[in-house]
Length: 158
Image (cartoon, rainbow, N blue to C red; front, top):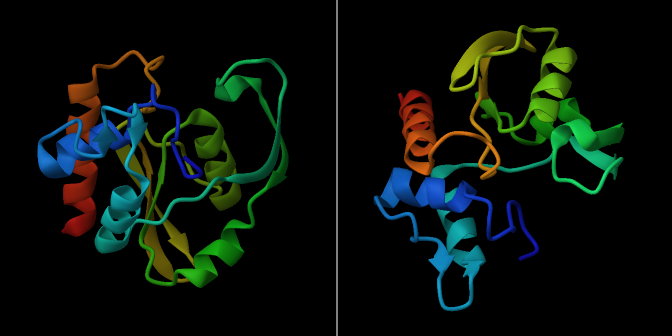
């Protein structure tokens, strides 16, 4: 899958399946052991959810998926990205490296996992949410992760 969170062992799309459809396999093609990219993209468009990385160029210093083993070579131009989506009111991170990059960029405190901090960006109040990683290496059950993401969605929609 040429898209975000393509690893079949990652639970991002299972989390959203639980949150919005009460079905962890809603976005899963079980027979092919892959995610349903077209359905995911339609869902994201319908919900107004944009995805992007906080770095455009990285080097893995070890052969792991861990954030601590990433060296950021080039950060994403967050300001330019936000200019393209002026109605954006919240940013969500799922990893420590992304959280570090954004809190440094906006000179704000790091939110606790499952929480947010408000900040001023070009005259408007925004929120930075820090959500649990969807990696199975993150020590929280899938259903508990989904509960936190459901709270996020409810907060953003209100």
